[in-house]
Length: 336
Image (tube, rainbow, N blue to C red; front, side, top):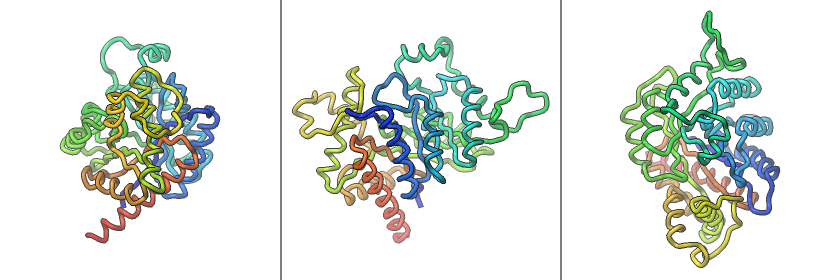
C-alpha cells in the first residue's frame, strides 16, 4: 500500500479570517484521520495574509489536540529562521504532549522575502549553515551524554523523526548523505523533480534512522464530481500563484471561470507549469492522473496538497483523493 498524507497551509480564503483557517485545518485533520491519511503536515510561511500557519509549532499542537491517531508535523520548519535548540525544544515538547505522533520536516528556504527574514532576527550574513544546523538539531534529540552542557528539554532522547524538504538537488543530496527521508516540493516547483529523485535514490547512504530511501511526492489534487468542477476549484490556486509571482500575495481567491479573460496569459502559463504535478477533475480523472504520477515516479509516499477556497469542497476533494489512492493500491496488487 502506498501511504498517503496531507500538506495543509491553513489557507485564509477571501472573505475568511485566520481563525476560520485554523479551525478549518483542525477539521480537515479530523476528516483526513477518518479517511486513512497517515500524516498531516503544516508549513512555515511569514508575512503572508493568505497563510495562517506562521507559528507552525503552535498550529501543530492545535491540530494534534483535535485528532487522536494521525501523525502531525511540519512540512516544514524553515531552519534558517531559527536556532536549532529552539526547534528541538518546541518539537521535543510537542512529542512529549503527543507521543509517537510528531514529525519534523526541515527546509532551507526562509519561507518569506528577505526583508521579513531580517525581521525574524536571524543572521543572514556568512555561509550556508543548513547542513550543520540539521545535524545539531538531530543531536539534540539523542540521549544526553555525561557532561553535556546544553540539552533540549523536553527533547533529549525523544528522537523525533526528521525529514528533509526541498525543491532542488541540494535537499536531495543532503537527505541522501544523512540517510534521512526526503520530500520534494513538486506541488509548486516540479522542474527538477526527476533529477532530485535520481540523485536521492542513487546516492542514499543508510543510517541508524533509515535503511532504505524514503521519497515523498507532493501532488496537488483538485477533485470534484466532474472534470469541470475540478478545474473550477483549481482556479483559486492558479490565481494565487499569479498573485504571488507578480508581487501581490494575499488571501486565497475565490474560484472563477475563464481565467484567460482577466489574467495575463504569460503569468497564467507560469502558474500552470508550477501546478503541473497534479490530479484535477472527476473521481475517475483524479484516479487516472494520480496513477500515472505514481507509476512514473514510484514514490514511497504521496502527500496531497489541496488549496480549495470552499471548505466543504476541500473536504470532499481529499475524500476523492483517498478513494483514488486506495483504489490504485488494489489495482496494483491485483496486477501483481
